[in-house]
Amino acid sequence: MSATIGERLREIRKRRGLSQRELSEQSGVSLSLIRKLEQGERADTRLETARQLAKALKVPTTRLVSEHAEAAADSDTVDRWAPVHAALAAPPELDGLDEAPTYEGVRDALEAAVPLFAHDRFAELGTALPRLLRDAEVLTETNTRGRPLRARLLELTGWLMTQTRQFDAAEMALERALDDATDRVQGAATVSVQCWLLLRRGRLAEARELAVHWADEVEPRMSRATPAELSAWGWLLLRMSAAAIRDNRPGEAEDALRLAHSAAVALGRECTPEEDFLRTFGPVTVALKRTENAMVSGQPDKVLTLAARIPADSLKPTSNNRNRHLLDVASAQTQLRQYAEAVDTFKKIRDGSPQWLPNQRYARDILGDIVSKRRTLTPDMRELADLMHLPV
Image 1 (cartoon, rainbow, N blue to C red):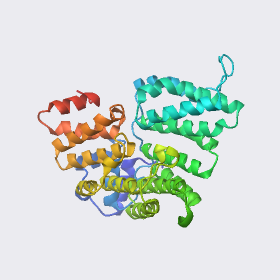
Image 2: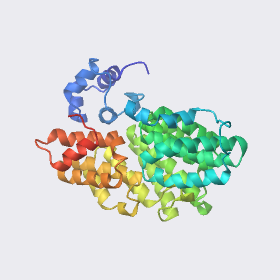
Image 3: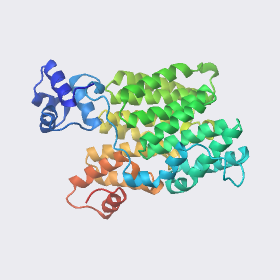
Image 4: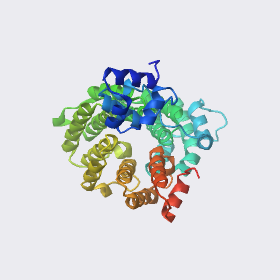
């Protein structure tokens, strides 16, 4: 799509017979921003704003923006993870090793590293991951049993790189993980992470199409589906719903959520197939994603109503799902001017995941909104602003 967002916005607005002022009133987007976009003074806007405009114009978000990525990691973050990037890109080196890695050794090292991924222990992973990646590569060159180990390690690494907004490295790791996948369920789990990467890069149509394709491929027979199959299918449906709601397709989003709920009901509880925290799925996970959709749709009251019914504390305190859910709660509280409650929610996230929080652009935007609307800041607000590296 060669036209700019401003050109597409102006064309669709005129086709709908709306003035700039009428579009502003119906979308909640400021008149000045609409004018700047249409006049070419602003070349881009936040995906949330584009979705609001698309909703008012009754078109998919992707009619206005073909791609809208989150800001990639800053240079300090990239430098900090440079050894991991090198280990991902470099061919295995068989020479110079004191002793060749064994299957048992790599398996045990990977199992020991999983809690570091699950609990967002970025500092420890930065030290341990380069050698583990190298050993997995060397092992797989000499022992075919190493391939599933490498697939899982690359999937976790791709998830970590996505988490820290190192999108190119994430794409590399996940493509290699999918190539290593030994069965369709493992492949579907990797594709779920790929869909999340595409969502964070703003490639909504690609994420939706990929999730739809793989959900069709792995849809199980409910009467005899295994927990691993239900989890894989359910997560692809959640990714489909996330892409659809951001693309202003609420009907599709709800249909996908309804199917995901049926998979969760079949499981009956939160389940973690093969002890892989990335695959944890069940009724609570679906409820968290329903709340997320409400936040994306701009319904803060509904977010808090839904959140009050979710036993989120039943998940691990550092669960990525739970943290993302709490950010939605903090965003809803902020929009409703419940600033003290929003700060308390931030503190809950910080206490459980101090290394995760500063890497979240969503969190920085919410906290920046709180800070900008307060005449004076409490000590907790100042401490959080420093943690999130908000500009002074």
